[in-house]
Amino acid sequence: MIRFDNVSMRYPGGHEALSRVSFSLERGEMAFLTGHSGAGKSTLLKLIMLMERASQGQVFVGDQNLNRMAVDQIPFLRRKIGVVFQNHQLLFDRSVFDNIALPLQISGYEKSSIGRRVRAALDKVGLLNKEKLNPILLSTGEQQRIGLARAIVNKPQVLLADEPTGNLDPQLSAEVMGLFHQFNQVGVTVLVASHDLDLISRMPHRCLTLQQGRLADA
Ligand code: ADP
Ligand code: ADP
Image (cartoon, rainbow, N blue to C red; front, side, top):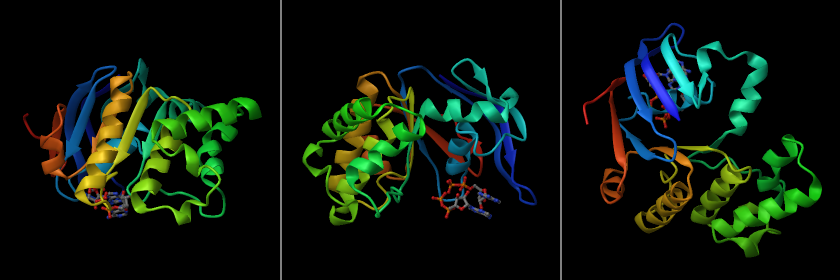
């Protein structure tokens, strides 16, 4: 589902953030991406979403070579990919429901189908009773679960997360990771960047480790 073939990435004026990275993640697989701050985790995720382009090598998502993808195709790529950030990036000027509905509205779904899908997403993260609230009233763990609901509401084939448990205590972290695991169990390909090695070691998934932009041997 995701394949990196000798990928290097250099930011303008910077040093190499990724050096000759090769790996593949099968459809329906889940893996973690670890490494110290600055190791290149966010950069790797950005290449998958085409928020950055590789300086060298090839990145594939599904059967698409992202190097050859035209700018007008990028929105279609992004619809295949749900993303969860550490600081959830929820909007506090609207309800939980409206936050989760946003990606569907952008994609032009009909109103009735938006309601159905938003509630299905809320149900999956266990927060069905919170739809009318402003997310500012929720706990950090609940906010992160709302961010996850927003990421999966349009049923993406791929789910990416950048330090999704970075602001959570160990118990809430385990709950949120458990949700990623659940989405993987129903067929979503999942890649989670995290430096919570303790939590990762307790989960049955492969771990890709970046060291200064290079993928360490497993
Ligand atoms: P993290 O370690 O969680 O990736 P950072 O604080 O390193 O967080 O980066 C936060 C954001 O700033 C990211 O989007 C990253 O790409 C960007 N960033 C990091 N380093 C630089 C830099 N030297 N110049 C410009 N942007 C940067
Ligand atoms: P991580 O997510 O593992 O913390 P990043 O991918 O954010 O690592 O960063 C990898 C390297 O690339 C770091 O040295 C960082 O400073 C640099 N970097 C990240 N984003 C940018 C950017 N937009 N411009 C310049 N350098 C960047």
